[in-house]
Image (tube, rainbow, N blue to C red; front, top):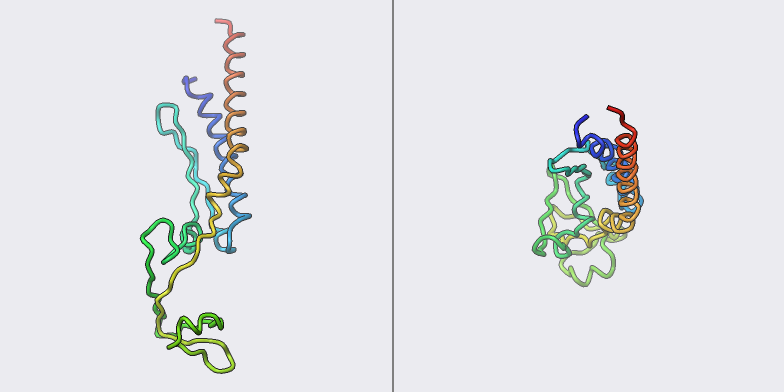
Length: 167
């Protein structure tokens, strides 16, 4: 048996468990159903030097906007507005709250509907409402416990096997 087999077995067992703890908490915090349903956890990868990793992905298109904010409210990129154009020649429809009527005085809602119809808009972005980062902060002690506990068990088992080995 290779020297790293116990560590590899422990990593293959505990890293997915720890990743599931994180993902399950992030799903509880996620703002959209699509974000909740778009998590995936990869396989444990041995990177060498007794280092292992596991990849957690979320493929929901809105994930980054919720995690880091977007536009003027972005925490990762330079704040700016961004253009949203209608697709396929359709008109964009927005509910125009009364408070915004003052800021966008040139844009008047259609009478009786409170809706504005535009071919495009300069969007100010959305404020961050993260799921992954706060979830990690909350569950990292539990994740450490799972990883450490499995590794400790593997080391103890190996020590016992070595102690009672008869060559």
